[in-house]
Amino acid sequence: MSLTLILVIMTSIISYQAFNSPATMGKLIFYPYAIKERGSSEWYRFLSGGFIHGDWGHLIINMIVLYQFGNFLEDGFIQVFGAGLGQILFILLYITAIIISDIPSYFQHQNNPGYRALGASGATSALVFGYILFNPWAWFAFPPLPALLYGVAFLWYSSYMEKRGADNIGHNAHFWGAVYGVLFTLISAFAFQPALLQYFWFKLLQGPTSPSFIG
Image (cartoon, rainbow, N blue to C red; front, side, top):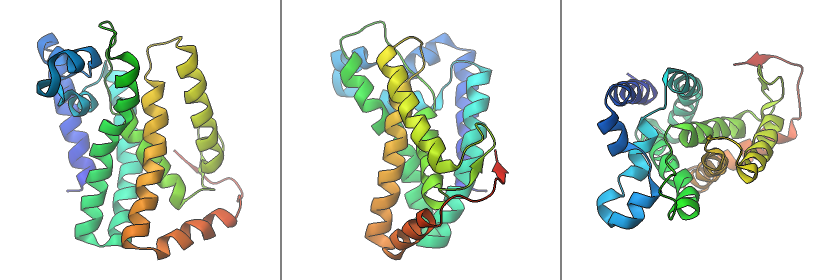
């Protein structure tokens, strides 16, 4: 069983439990104010909030993205770095992306007792942008754009919506999760397989192709 599938199953089970238990939801949700007030006993929330979701729609969308792009990136890491190291790097990317993508929101909302966040979107954004490094000109079905242009549009939109603050979506986590996904993949390539950096550059220079949609 792939690590991606294990993550999908684990996240779905924990989210389902939280749907049916407000106490579980409250215990696991990312809550910057509680982290600041209670200190290290609440640090687990940086991670646990990524394994619960607000409703079925939120969960299903994130799990579809996780399954599709996680499988690709997990297989890619195994092929490039080898089975052992590749799987370690993949799970490390996913787990640390949940944590790293929440840090900006923590500093922004640590004095706001009304702010809470949840969901795997920071980590799934990291996976999508790791995919973009490998296939910058693959076409996304929705929106119908090459992956690289989708990535640029996604970063701009996330930054714009975060500044507007007009909804309850964690655009900040989306933005920083995406950036982290690129940085983690590049640093891993530099440290363990430098030839992969040349591959990324080669794929980028190939330029756009005729539409052949994924999604």
